[in-house]
Picture 1: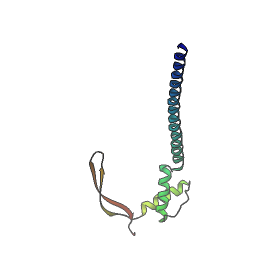
Picture 2 (picture 1 turned 60 degrees about the vertical axis):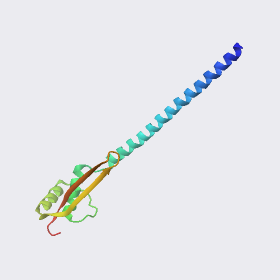
Picture 3 (picture 1 turned 90 degrees about the horizontal axis):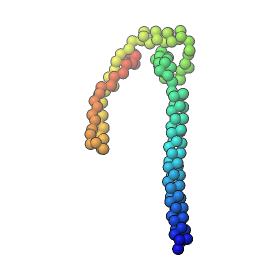
Length: 130
């Protein structure tokens, strides 16, 4: 009789250990999945930060495009004299402000039941001959 009680308690203990082991491995699987996704997101952020041009590069490209009057691909020139001439050309152009229209945007959030209304007039600065 005592042997049966020991065997029953051994079976109960082995069931508890296997159940606890599956919870532990389930938690580890979740941690591994979160770590994997985090690594992928961090790699994407690093790649984007390398590929996105800096503010100075963007300004230089915009000045060159405005100076040439075309939107074709322009080689970025590291020559400071070219930057000065592009800025001088841009400053000498006769610019005018043009209205692109009035806009009204409404967004609705179904979770809160709130809506957001945004009204604005959009303007652009262009060369006067355009």
